[in-house]
Image (tube, rainbow, N blue to C red; front, side, top):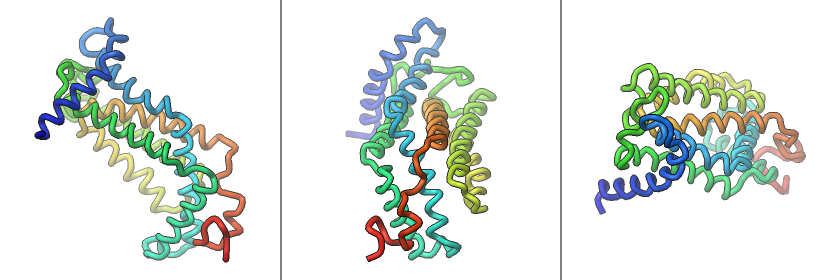
Length: 244
């Protein structure tokens, strides 16, 4: 099958998934029903898998907390140091029960869902008339849609950056390079993505990022430990069982 055929089939399947939700919003004018369907469907999976989302946020906090401790002032670009950090992070995530194939699978399904919606925006029968507030067309990139499109790109950048800042603060990150990446580079990257990805992709992407931020805030306010009780007792680079 050609790429065009696969895209057409994917668009039809995605439209069949979006249609029941769009029916709920049919009283709305224009293509807003399909816009709401894209937003709700794109974010619904994350709502249904909320415990995994919070667990992923906790894992990010642990990862950012553990990495600089293991590095201990050494060059983080050194191959041996990177291997030691990776080993130590995996050990902590395992001990805290934060490594889960189900959580990984949930994230992969979410990514595939957003991509399939983007494919639908280019090939779906109803996609041409789909719109949302500030986005007169979901098939075009926000950069071409005027102030409304730029506003949605900004929404995506703000939510993504706020999530990174919440995780960084919870982990007590003081490394200047990491703080620079989170507060300076990340907004530019996500704003650019928000401008040039299809609007049908930006809409659920922004919704998902808002949920990621909520999950990060929940994770930072929980009573669960950031690291295991044995973390400070183990020599660096020695996994779960301790020194042998």
